[in-house]
Image: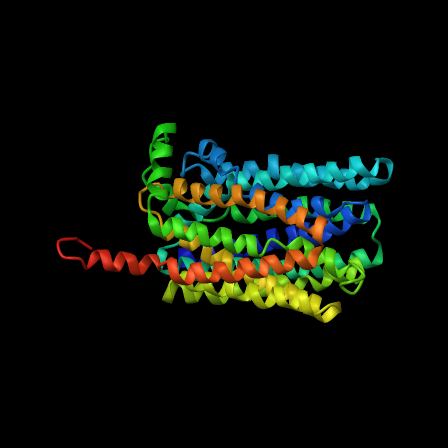
Length: 424
């Protein structure tokens, strides 16, 4: 790693740590879930949180491709988007929480859910273009290590944010406290861009600009990506794994219930910090491992850990079970994050990587919406234990599919390059 890459990595780690800390002050799966339960939310609404977070961060990426065309101007455009769109949604939720007692419970619940949709969609619009910008800043041979370390340290900062949020909510779970947490999130996101803007993206700026994709060309690139059999199998594996682990918001719902041990909200938010520790360790370790052995390995680890995590939720109530469940959830999420995005980078069969990232995330995001609604309906109709059992079966099948049907992209390229008559 040269001096420029090292400096960029330090700046990125610092800024992403602030982002991780900020977002974990108001984690939807814990903080918002507990707040909505406090105001009468049911299983379907809690289940929808998973779909909003996942699909909201994935489905709007097509719009991002239209808004952020120039790689040379992307850093400035991303900064403006954060300050003018993402931050205001956090502030809107702060205002809603501040006046929660003056609103009807139903209006407050739906207002907060609408705020979450806007916040996650605002992030989702820039997910693909941000990932593409990051991919241009770091070389492929160090990209997994660097991004894994960046996301890992961000998760560690998030764990600190989660503990602080839990402590504050134990002191007071009033709407004003929730409002302060959302306000702090918005302010920290502004601060993070004061650091991110110092990143030297001359490597990205020096890259030749690709022509603006027409609708026809865009769909041709989508088709080219989806015609690749290994990419299709990868998407199926990710959807199966997502369906098998759509229960993260339900961890809070289960362990705050009498059946799960009736843990109070502040304690549960603090306990969920171990999820961030799991994410951090998985990102750091598997990012480096992926650079050496291929990122399919991280997905295998992520999917495999879903199985014992779901068994914990079926068999172990109380505080120990809660800690183990959040630890497993963190390892699953972290393993899937760094490995998923690097697999997206490396499975691209054409020159438009941002189109490839977008179609992959659109596909998974669309499936996630349906998955979350079905999960909420199952939880409401048959209970959480039935949902956990179904997810366990799906996780086993996802692991089987990933192990048997998805090949390591680097190995595929190696096989192609060594065929007679084919240039490497």
